[in-house]
Length: 319
Image 1 (cartoon, rainbow, N blue to C red):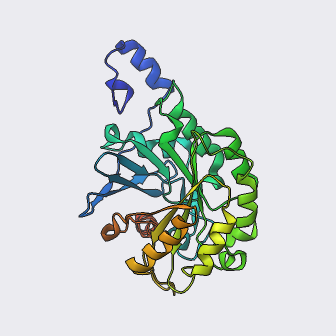
Image 2 (image 1 turned 135 degrees about the vertical axis):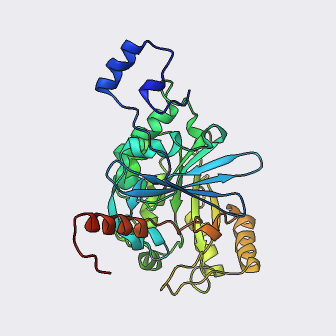
């Protein structure tokens, strides 16, 4: 019934409402800001129980509506191409914080899919991510099919296997290059779990039926866009039931990487598709409000709140 407080539960007696309110709280927090893109995407800013903030992106389409949720404030992974990583790590979200992004969304009833592709590395907050997906898919919760939920990861040793064993949700792996040394440049997490090790693990699971496996690949000009890279991808994924999503790079400050033009993107896709790797080019959404892939960051908002706190305590604020 979308109630925001126990007092709104008018289908139970006042006495019982008072008993519940004495012990429990619904705990939902409304978004404190919303930015609207010209393409219909909406980026919401949610407060957390710890006093921090996270961004959540609502992406409507013709026949579906996807919510991109965050699992952490900031991120430890420090991927070269991601603004969230530049924010640093501020803390993991509780299952309540993650679920609140869904429950308190104004468009909640329109949602068809949820993707854990917002701020943070889901495998680095696995207990709370699994608790969230359990509630989302359980009869006592939202009753969603696991097929409506996708969890993304760079690949975290031990954690990825546990997720695959304990969840039936779709999985998306951030690849971005099939080459070990080059991936270390982009993603420090490659040192802990290599892309070869990730693929070796994934081969132990069945992705031919209900669960889907996909790979994310931002295409960078003169870095990972050559035919040699495409050939290496084909070889790496041979025999694995999966799909590849090519993503346009959205520039962030002080990063030397550049994106490719549409012709290069299509050429790369065509090579992969022709050699047995089903490949799509993901449409960029919300770039004008910094809601596109790799652009989420609440560092500025958190600093503003810290500044307010210092002022309230009567201290001088230095920038």
